[in-house]
Amino acid sequence: MKYFFQLILTLFLVQNSFGQQAQQATFNPDQDLRAKPKLVVGVVVDQMRYDYLTRFWDKFGDEGFKKLVSEGFNFRNTHFNYIPTYTGPGHASVYSGGAPESHGIISNSWYDKFEKQSVYCVSDPSVESIGTSSDAGKMSPHRMITTSVADENRLHTQMRGKTIGIALKDRGAILPAGHTANAAYWFHGQDEGKWITSSFYAETLPGWVKKFNASGKAAEYMKPWETLYKASDYAESGTDVNLYEGGFEGKEDTGFPYDLPNLKDKNGGYDLLKATPYGNSLTADFAIASLDGEDLGQDDITDFLTVSFSSTDYVGHNFGVNSREIQDTYLRLDQDLARLLKALDQKVGEGNYTLFLTSDHGGVHVPAYLQSVKIPAGYFDYGKFQDSLNAFLAERFGVENLILNVSNNQIFFNYEEVLENKISRDELQNEMAHFALQYGMVNKVFTRSQLEGTSYTEGLASSVDHGYHQKRSGDVVLVLEPSVISYSRTGSTHGSGQNYDTHAPLIFYGKGIKTGNTLERTEIVDIAPTISALLGISFPNGSTGRPLYMAFEE
Image 1 (cartoon, rainbow, N blue to C red):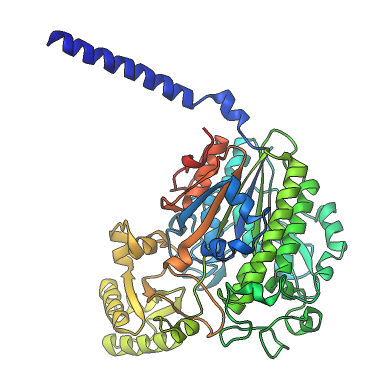
Image 2 (image 1 turned 120 degrees about the horizontal axis):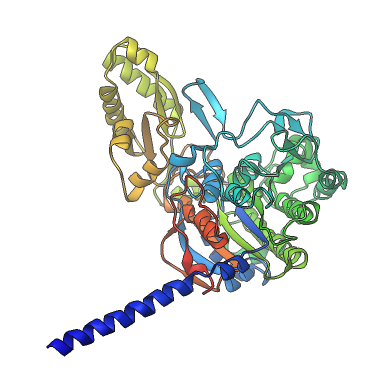
């Protein structure tokens, strides 16, 4: 027996020694530093559902989406872990590694209970527009209260690693690039058709941006929009002309082709390009120009380029997720991605950069269409709901104006009236919750007391919890039934915690990334920690996600 215990002890010591050697082998500072890419490229495709990858797969070429999937690591079950799923919160969450509860971007716009007015997520009256005389440039990331992964890279490199943000939408350029970015550029349409910025970043546009604006690229894309392929190749989508699409002013139907030059004046001038695939092409052109213009990825200090393709969102809102217009937009985006990857290979060097592609939210099938095929869906009228709620509260408490605002599925109390009339906040919350739950198409209701006093770990309750910011959010939160939206009867939207809004693509590609895929559930907040771990830098200060180490080369 004595020798038996000695043998067990020996085996334990040998195993422990091997374990220590294995642990030591997993971290080699020299090897870790050599693994750093010269450039990290973050690509967000606005309103991209995961199933667009599979639905349009057979029509994609070999050098865009298929190249990323076949040579990169594809996370096939990635979800947003919060509500609401909008563009501002989406971009902030991708790059901060945290949900709205931490970064504070609770919507695109929200009611500020302290200013008693609606505020836009990147508006900033303290800065000036650069590149335009309009107010379109008066923007900054000051409302995002945490760092982005790009911020952390700037801090880690003593500000020597450069960060450039690019998107048609201001919020899609600004929030990813963070607070320390060298520049963020977005597109101002109307009668100008220019890329602009803010005095938050610079006092004037750099020469390469001025040159790009003067090149007439935007004007070149103001051309007819026809399908990339013949009509029979769009069998993955609905009929070309149907009742569920919005269309453009000045055109009677919603069928191809679209004569953009003739539609321009009635549809916002150059803003019309945003709602066509040409907006993505223009974004790709500008992103490629930035590689040389900003000298990105030209030394051993990692730079960041954040690119958001926004046209997919505009087209989805207008025509719906089942339209031929959305399919054509993705087929053309596939070509734009191929151009971007080719430029990165040529200018930064194949194997010298790491790229990830994801989305900021998904999108719902047009509820009117779902109703036509007998799937439960509907439209919620918040105006009628607020009127009914006000009438109920006036009768119940004998006081008018107990609600200041209803927006983003949240109800904000008028605390002055509540205090003046000595109304119990808990009682008011509970009465509102009870009323709302009896109201048609409302699925769940959460009160401030519940969200502040309970930690939810799964399901929609957890998503509401992660999207709830104690200081900025309202006092009662509504969750509507699946496929019920507050929107027009044409086109798609988003914002819920249902799978059609939360399931997003996530692909890592390039230096330090192996080929593979997984169906393990992952979350959008895991992206920033993953890039941070790859670079060996601090995680963003509000990050709650985990590094997806399974994508790393061994």
